[in-house]
Length: 476
Image (cartoon, rainbow, N blue to C red; front, top):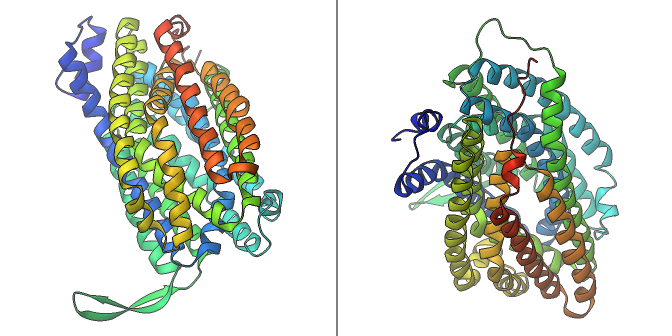
């Protein structure tokens, strides 16, 4: 089991890897995804620092609508996973022709959904900041940012779908490298679009750096351009370079009922989960907005800073989806359960360590994000509150990835519905008037702990394993 291609073949032959081999395989699959997450977080840090240098109003403009962008991004992820989980099972069963047929239908669906999401986003962009109770002086820039983001949603949908299908086929390296490239492109485009033409000093030399001076709108356009370029490259890698999924002559692009039904069964609960999470985050933004621009900016930047802590969990969760999905496809439910528990344990250890670092270095992290001392002080305070939730947050993240690989997407959506609305929103409403933003983040910390415990019980009871049945052929 020395290669990523050989391990699924070994599972089909009934070989059970040693614990050391399982850990090595998880690390091999996780590292590319973690590196991609690191680059994504680095991009967010650089974006936040670039926009933050323009002042609190600019940071608040993006922070106000950030939760809504997460909602649309989450719907794109859910749609992608409805097809990528099928591919994981089919590749695990070595039904490559069926996997390629799923790929074709996934691309057609991605085009339709991407255009639909974009149309909805464009329609609501003008009123969205007002609905979120944003200050009058930041609503116009927030609206413009979201309009540009909405125009890029078809590219985002294609990038998400292509990357997810490559990962579930066992290729973690290609999407990770392309996502790293996207982050680099985002920095380049943002530096050219956000700021005006200026003189830059480097190594004692002065030179003119061209710029469009678009401010907040430039940040949105830079991100959109990087998404579009990466989507094109991801599609090329998927359709023409993937050993398992590259398109062959003779395949059909016709949408079939079995494939779409299965995709809907997998994607709709996950879409509900994302909608529950993001809608609760949007409500939380409305709770934070009346606290003032300093609180809105500190809240947004703290979310960016905290993402540095949970990025390893996201990478390990991606590996868990692939390992569990292909184990199920190979008929090895015993290995699916082993991989699930092992990835969750590894994720908890790594994110606990990251939480300790986040607590210690919170002042340094915020010093990189904004020059505003008031935002820094408040951000450090709430970030240290959140650090205590990281171990159980890791359990929730990685267990969700494992359950997704098994096709069990309903339970996570129900857990998130209860924890987000029953705990986070309710407690935030109670604590915000008295304690301000720290009260909101205390509610968030408690909710993540509750969520982690719910997922841990689901994982250990093992009831998700019988639900992981073989998926039907997309051409049946």
